[in-house]
Image 1 (tube, rainbow over the protein chains, first blue to last red):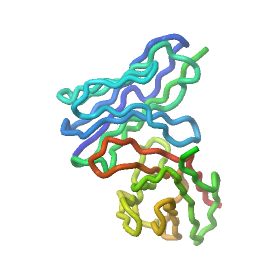
Image 2 (cartoon, rainbow over the protein chains, first blue to last red):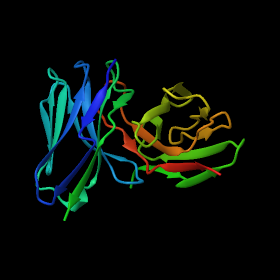
Image 3 (tube, each protein chain N blue to C red):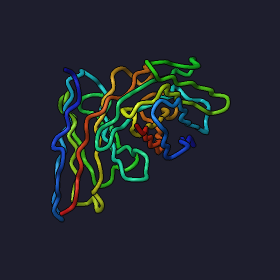
Image 4 (cartoon, chains in turn cyan, blue):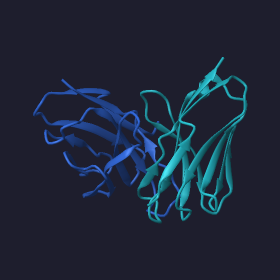
Length: 113
Length: 115
Protein backbone atom coordinates (compact mmCIF):
# COMPACT_ATOMS: atom_id res chain seq x y z
CA UNK A 1 0.00 0.00 0.00
CA UNK A 2 1.43 3.33 -1.08
CA UNK A 3 2.21 5.79 1.70
CA UNK A 4 3.52 9.34 1.35
CA UNK A 5 5.54 11.00 4.12
CA UNK A 6 6.77 14.56 4.37
CA UNK A 7 9.53 15.59 6.73
CA UNK A 8 9.83 17.97 8.48
CA UNK A 9 6.24 18.79 9.43
CA UNK A 10 7.21 22.41 10.04
CA UNK A 11 10.17 24.58 9.11
CA UNK A 12 11.11 28.15 10.00
CA UNK A 13 13.93 29.91 8.15
CA UNK A 14 15.24 33.46 7.75
CA UNK A 15 14.58 35.26 4.49
CA UNK A 16 17.13 34.59 1.75
CA UNK A 17 17.97 31.07 2.81
CA UNK A 18 17.95 28.18 0.33
CA UNK A 19 15.89 25.28 1.62
CA UNK A 20 14.86 21.73 0.83
CA UNK A 21 11.55 20.03 1.56
CA UNK A 22 11.36 16.26 1.50
CA UNK A 23 8.74 13.80 0.29
CA UNK A 24 9.12 10.03 0.47
CA UNK A 25 6.89 7.27 -0.90
CA UNK A 26 6.88 3.53 -0.29
CA UNK A 27 6.01 2.14 -3.74
CA UNK A 28 8.39 3.23 -6.49
CA UNK A 29 5.95 2.30 -9.28
CA UNK A 30 4.53 5.80 -9.47
CA UNK A 31 3.09 7.50 -12.52
CA UNK A 32 4.25 10.96 -11.47
CA UNK A 33 4.85 13.04 -8.36
CA UNK A 34 3.17 16.37 -7.75
CA UNK A 35 4.00 19.30 -5.48
CA UNK A 36 1.33 21.75 -4.34
CA UNK A 37 1.24 24.86 -2.21
CA UNK A 38 -1.58 25.77 0.19
CA UNK A 39 -1.95 29.19 1.79
CA UNK A 40 -3.93 29.37 5.07
CA UNK A 41 -7.66 29.01 4.50
CA UNK A 42 -7.21 28.59 0.75
CA UNK A 43 -7.21 25.86 -1.84
CA UNK A 44 -4.15 24.18 -3.30
CA UNK A 45 -2.05 25.50 -6.16
CA UNK A 46 -0.10 23.11 -8.36
CA UNK A 47 3.62 23.95 -8.37
CA UNK A 48 5.38 21.18 -10.24
CA UNK A 49 4.55 17.77 -11.70
CA UNK A 50 7.42 15.37 -12.36
CA UNK A 51 6.65 12.50 -14.69
CA UNK A 52 8.05 9.08 -13.80
CA UNK A 53 10.54 9.28 -16.68
CA UNK A 54 11.91 12.64 -15.51
CA UNK A 55 14.51 13.40 -12.85
CA UNK A 56 13.59 17.01 -12.15
CA UNK A 57 11.39 19.96 -13.01
CA UNK A 58 12.06 23.66 -12.53
CA UNK A 59 9.81 26.69 -12.23
CA UNK A 60 11.41 29.98 -11.28
CA UNK A 61 13.06 29.59 -7.87
CA UNK A 62 11.59 26.12 -7.41
CA UNK A 63 13.26 22.88 -8.42
CA UNK A 64 11.78 19.47 -7.74
CA UNK A 65 13.75 16.25 -8.13
CA UNK A 66 12.57 12.67 -8.26
CA UNK A 67 14.49 9.50 -7.37
CA UNK A 68 12.10 6.58 -7.80
CA UNK A 69 14.61 3.94 -6.76
CA UNK A 70 15.02 5.48 -3.32
CA UNK A 71 11.39 6.58 -3.07
CA UNK A 72 12.22 10.24 -2.60
CA UNK A 73 11.47 13.65 -4.00
CA UNK A 74 12.84 16.99 -2.88
CA UNK A 75 11.53 20.50 -3.46
CA UNK A 76 14.33 23.05 -3.47
CA UNK A 77 13.41 26.69 -2.91
CA UNK A 78 16.15 29.18 -3.71
CA UNK A 79 16.52 32.55 -2.00
CA UNK A 80 13.39 32.14 0.12
CA UNK A 81 11.03 35.09 0.61
CA UNK A 82 8.30 35.79 3.20
CA UNK A 83 5.76 35.24 0.40
CA UNK A 84 6.91 31.61 0.21
CA UNK A 85 5.35 30.99 3.64
CA UNK A 86 2.70 28.32 3.14
CA UNK A 87 2.13 24.59 3.49
CA UNK A 88 3.74 22.47 0.77
CA UNK A 89 2.15 19.12 -0.05
CA UNK A 90 3.30 16.30 -2.27
CA UNK A 91 1.11 13.63 -3.83
CA UNK A 92 1.45 10.55 -6.03
CA UNK A 93 -1.22 8.81 -8.10
CA UNK A 94 -2.56 5.49 -6.95
CA UNK A 95 -2.47 2.22 -8.79
CA UNK A 96 -0.91 3.07 -12.13
CA UNK A 97 -3.16 5.84 -13.32
CA UNK A 98 -3.68 9.48 -12.55
CA UNK A 99 -7.27 9.26 -11.41
CA UNK A 100 -6.75 9.43 -7.65
CA UNK A 101 -3.91 10.80 -5.55
CA UNK A 102 -2.31 9.78 -2.26
CA UNK A 103 -1.33 12.85 -0.23
CA UNK A 104 1.35 13.64 2.28
CA UNK A 105 0.48 15.69 5.36
CA UNK A 106 2.56 18.63 4.17
CA UNK A 107 5.41 20.78 5.45
CA UNK A 108 4.41 24.11 6.97
CA UNK A 109 7.03 26.68 5.96
CA UNK A 110 7.56 30.06 7.64
CA UNK A 111 10.05 32.46 6.05
CA UNK A 112 10.88 35.23 8.48
CA UNK A 113 11.85 38.74 7.28
CA UNK B 1 -10.21 33.98 -16.08
CA UNK B 2 -10.75 30.23 -15.96
CA UNK B 3 -11.00 28.58 -12.60
CA UNK B 4 -13.00 26.73 -10.01
CA UNK B 5 -15.56 28.53 -7.87
CA UNK B 6 -16.72 27.08 -4.60
CA UNK B 7 -19.59 28.59 -2.65
CA UNK B 8 -20.33 29.50 -0.01
CA UNK B 9 -17.00 30.23 1.63
CA UNK B 10 -18.46 29.52 5.09
CA UNK B 11 -21.46 27.31 5.87
CA UNK B 12 -23.19 26.37 9.10
CA UNK B 13 -25.28 23.26 9.51
CA UNK B 14 -27.89 22.54 12.13
CA UNK B 15 -28.39 19.07 13.56
CA UNK B 16 -30.40 16.86 11.21
CA UNK B 17 -30.03 19.22 8.26
CA UNK B 18 -28.69 18.47 4.79
CA UNK B 19 -26.51 21.15 3.21
CA UNK B 20 -25.17 21.45 -0.33
CA UNK B 21 -21.78 22.82 -1.30
CA UNK B 22 -21.44 24.24 -4.77
CA UNK B 23 -18.52 23.67 -7.15
CA UNK B 24 -18.44 25.17 -10.64
CA UNK B 25 -15.55 25.13 -13.12
CA UNK B 26 -15.10 26.87 -16.46
CA UNK B 27 -11.87 25.06 -17.38
CA UNK B 28 -13.68 22.50 -19.56
CA UNK B 29 -12.18 19.74 -17.40
CA UNK B 30 -13.68 16.27 -17.52
CA UNK B 31 -12.71 15.02 -14.06
CA UNK B 32 -13.91 16.61 -10.82
CA UNK B 33 -13.17 15.72 -7.20
CA UNK B 34 -14.35 16.46 -3.68
CA UNK B 35 -11.91 16.30 -0.77
CA UNK B 36 -12.23 16.79 2.94
CA UNK B 37 -9.35 18.36 4.90
CA UNK B 38 -9.05 18.07 8.68
CA UNK B 39 -6.20 19.39 10.85
CA UNK B 40 -3.39 16.86 11.12
CA UNK B 41 -4.82 14.63 8.40
CA UNK B 42 -4.04 14.45 4.73
CA UNK B 43 -6.57 15.27 2.07
CA UNK B 44 -9.22 12.54 1.92
CA UNK B 45 -11.21 11.82 -1.21
CA UNK B 46 -14.99 11.85 -0.82
CA UNK B 47 -16.25 11.40 -4.39
CA UNK B 48 -14.90 11.84 -7.88
CA UNK B 49 -16.38 11.99 -11.36
CA UNK B 50 -14.59 11.32 -14.61
CA UNK B 51 -17.50 12.22 -16.92
CA UNK B 52 -21.02 13.64 -16.81
CA UNK B 53 -23.63 11.39 -15.20
CA UNK B 54 -20.96 9.14 -13.70
CA UNK B 55 -19.27 9.31 -10.30
CA UNK B 56 -17.50 6.96 -7.91
CA UNK B 57 -17.11 6.83 -4.15
CA UNK B 58 -13.80 7.81 -2.68
CA UNK B 59 -12.38 6.75 0.67
CA UNK B 60 -14.94 8.49 2.93
CA UNK B 61 -18.20 8.67 0.97
CA UNK B 62 -20.54 7.69 3.81
CA UNK B 63 -22.85 10.56 4.72
CA UNK B 64 -22.21 12.42 1.46
CA UNK B 65 -23.86 12.47 -1.95
CA UNK B 66 -23.03 14.10 -5.29
CA UNK B 67 -24.45 14.63 -8.75
CA UNK B 68 -22.83 15.40 -12.10
CA UNK B 69 -25.58 16.54 -14.45
CA UNK B 70 -23.40 19.11 -16.20
CA UNK B 71 -19.71 19.07 -17.04
CA UNK B 72 -19.16 22.35 -15.23
CA UNK B 73 -20.89 21.49 -11.96
CA UNK B 74 -20.28 18.92 -9.22
CA UNK B 75 -22.30 19.77 -6.08
CA UNK B 76 -21.70 17.94 -2.81
CA UNK B 77 -24.50 17.32 -0.31
CA UNK B 78 -23.53 16.69 3.29
CA UNK B 79 -26.40 14.70 4.73
CA UNK B 80 -27.57 14.35 8.32
CA UNK B 81 -26.00 10.88 8.27
CA UNK B 82 -22.55 12.50 8.35
CA UNK B 83 -22.08 12.82 12.10
CA UNK B 84 -18.85 14.79 12.06
CA UNK B 85 -19.13 17.18 9.12
CA UNK B 86 -17.03 20.02 10.51
CA UNK B 87 -14.12 20.35 8.08
CA UNK B 88 -12.67 22.27 5.15
CA UNK B 89 -14.06 20.97 1.85
CA UNK B 90 -12.10 21.32 -1.37
CA UNK B 91 -13.27 20.80 -4.93
CA UNK B 92 -10.81 20.07 -7.72
CA UNK B 93 -10.84 19.35 -11.42
CA UNK B 94 -8.42 17.89 -13.94
CA UNK B 95 -8.17 17.71 -17.69
CA UNK B 96 -7.29 14.65 -19.72
CA UNK B 97 -7.83 10.96 -19.20
CA UNK B 98 -6.53 8.65 -16.48
CA UNK B 99 -3.06 8.50 -18.03
CA UNK B 100 -2.40 12.12 -18.88
CA UNK B 101 0.13 13.88 -16.69
CA UNK B 102 -1.97 16.84 -15.74
CA UNK B 103 -2.30 18.24 -12.21
CA UNK B 104 -5.52 18.87 -10.34
CA UNK B 105 -6.75 22.46 -10.02
CA UNK B 106 -8.46 23.50 -6.81
CA UNK B 107 -11.10 25.94 -5.66
CA UNK B 108 -10.69 28.06 -2.54
CA UNK B 109 -12.73 25.74 -0.34
CA UNK B 110 -15.82 25.83 1.85
CA UNK B 111 -15.50 25.72 5.62
CA UNK B 112 -18.44 23.84 7.15
CA UNK B 113 -19.24 24.09 10.84
CA UNK B 114 -21.96 22.68 13.09
CA UNK B 115 -24.28 25.07 14.92
